[in-house]
Image 1 (cartoon, helix red, strand yellow):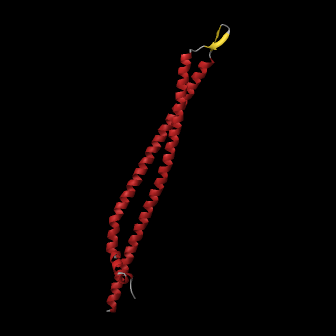
Image 2: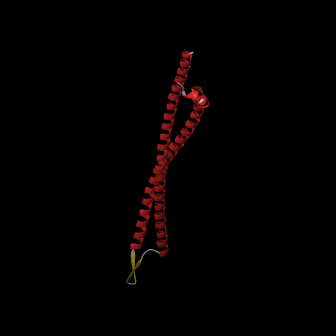
Image 3: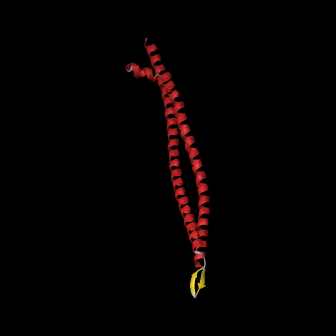
Length: 171
């Protein structure tokens, strides 16, 4: 009866439990550190995005109020009429009407910009949450792999000891 390491001595040397375990311990900490940093950075980015989204929602609310107020002032200024020489004419000066129009346009533009920014931050948050899921899955798989490797290491050690025992009992 031949064992794996007797048929393939070069491979078996690398698969001996002490070398196998040392190889993976040196890489385990490196991989865990990389994944830990990735998870940490993703978590920080998610929390930052949530804070930014909250502040953008508050800013959007304010922008909507300012826009509504500016449009209301413009409409009120346009609706005030004077009767000049028997004809209705706007009571407000044309310069003030233009200024109110520009202010209403800027307020509406700011509102639209805030909405677009909020949508973009929402998309970034969704992407970061997906990345977070992937990182946690990789951490789980890494843990599973190293748990499996340690079990295989123990199994190889058992087989190695068994082969030594069998070879001693045959002699």
